[in-house]
Image (cartoon, rainbow, N blue to C red; front, side, top):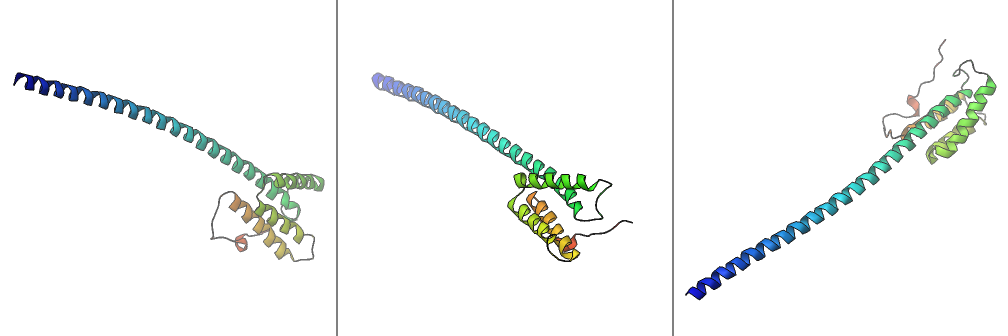
Length: 161
């Protein structure tokens, strides 16, 4: 009976020690996995932040280009420019046009081309203004405004006297 009791105690001790060792190995493995997952999450976070920053910088650059472009388009709308000389306005237009081809989306470039074509053809000022508004809407869309509520008919042209 004593031998049986020693065997039971020995086996119970062995099982308890083995259980503790297995638990320690599993915990260590889980900690290592957690560390690897944390490391991967940090890498993904860094990539996403870089991508977001890059996209935000691109949008900011486009916004600046589009602001200059709209301002330079005033050369075509006689009542929309300050006291700049015509040569200054032409220079602004040429710079904005060149920059548009670097930063503008295809949709904006196509809309702008349609706007320019309307000034090379004998069409009414209404058509020219409509093409101007389409170009501005294409710029808005490219900058992230996805509204379906407005269209080129909503853009108002007016003269301040």
